[in-house]
Image 1: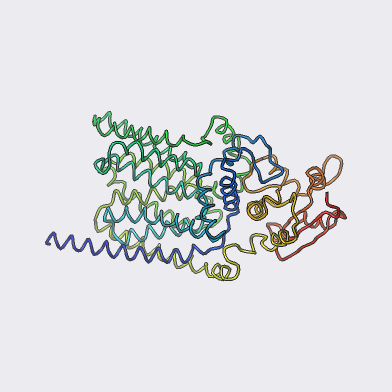
Image 2: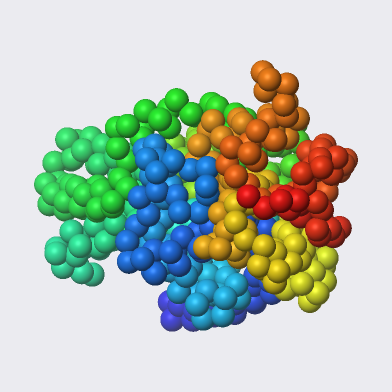
Length: 511
């Protein structure tokens, strides 16, 4: 066949891929971007960004909760200061149109992920069906399980851009000067380090890369290649340390002590793929396994191309992903890039491509159908669901200027911080700044008593001079909340507001 004709056919396929990819992007955007905000963490990130902008400094203590110490632990200080850059971005988007700025946040992160993969697939001329199947599969799993407005998306993007930058430095140095070998990785890692603690994943990837490249250098003695990769790695590590909240030795010790504590026992992100799939029947993991095995298919090609560092990163990341599903999106980012870099044409690959796109399209039809209720909720309530957050109760408190110290459940803390601070301060939120407080909170909801026989919640309200309590009507199992019933029986507290989700109590005599 005429080479010109082959090139023409390739361009037509790439153009078709571009059009199909755009259709996928529009479909995914319309399906997922208008979902109600379900992450309470987003709200305290948003408020922290506002606090940083107004005070022109990073918080050295928690300004939002009355229970927080003015001398936070190493872990607490890291949580207070470790996300400041992305929090300022949240605040900038929100300042355009309050909570509707979340659409801009979501669209920015989703566009970044989308462009990352499409550019890699297009450059490597990957089969359009395989490209669309992998892209669709990744977006379905990610958007079904991870909110786009969480800072962890910075880590998912950071992993992809770090690996792309590594390959440019290794294979395409002529595309930018040697100075950029120093500047680009340092800037990337510095932005990452000031946005999310997942920069440690980037540090791990850089460590794997330089170890493998050192072994490769000892074998082939390519000093020019090794020199620029060494500079790249050192620059990346230095950039990752350019943060006011860099991981300290004290923080590492505290994290190790808390690694298996009760904060993680019921967190599904720390469960294994096996537990998700066979114990909790989360069959969406089948889509993840499909993309894993599709990626493994190209390891032979990676060996032939001597992409040893990429193979090691691929295997290490998937080891941790199978152990804790929280690393699955990172593993999928690595996998999609791995496929694009090691793709080759064959009849077997062509058949694999058909199988992947059929499975991904079937998954999209299945899970997008479940979003019909989300559309109804969006039309009625906007981006904040009154079925999940105490929207009406908070409006009642604000309109009646019922401010002060508020006792609240953990999962509503972030929303209360966003809506009522600085007029009010709160008991606890999902930052888990104090593990002892979390344990105390569990005892309070269990209606445990002190040694003197008094209910712990009664002692707590008196000790902290709390005047307001905002409680859900029901517990996690759908039964009446015992603590709420205990408040109702108390003569010192009056129920001044109630709806289908929550109830507000105020002391009979304000302290």
